[in-house]
Image (cartoon, rainbow, N blue to C red):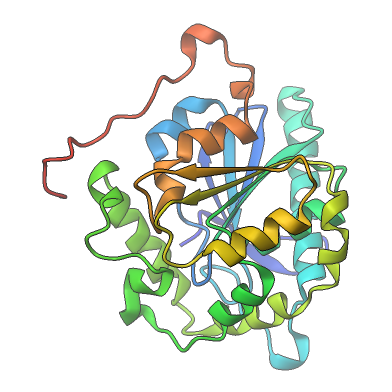
Length: 293
């Protein structure tokens, strides 16, 4: 479940989850996969030490954001504008409270969430200066993902995550964090998937992807079960020519956790302007030979 519910200028009420340092002067927005809710931090220890504030917003029908009726479905452009309005309001509040100057933010899109993250960078270039797409599904693949018949009983398999994925042993508590994210995603049944079907049907924004001004990075595991070579090729073709692709050796569906340090280094390279001696040098990891708790 999201940390709080907030009313946006559009009048829509959304669930918002926050992680990291609440007083940091670097804001990063994470767009969750399909199905998934906002209450997920791939590595809280690393996030907490990095010097950023990580924020996720539940899309309609997921977590704490109410589903909408079929005749009032929220299109992708409207959802992205809601996210942008939240960012702008958050920046004004930060300036009022701490005199922080938050002109831009970083954005992360995981899986189908890459569609939302990229659309945000397209529609609001003045807000997004750095963009990371992790295991990104191309728009057509995101539509397919949202069109599946799934329930909470499917658990991690809904995201292509196997019970014996090695990343679960490498990152302490990752299994429990995934459980919470998936459970929250289905608190309203399949309403989130239904909402995503409408969101991902909108593709006009893709024609402007090559003009994105944000510095772009694509991260994929070398054994990805969902975001395949065709998905990566699609993003390579449509993102700006300067976009980089980084492959994570020995990683599959949980590249988001395995590469979290690289993700944060891209979206918050200055560590929220925390001095060098106080910056994080890595999060604790379980030894590979220990069983998961």
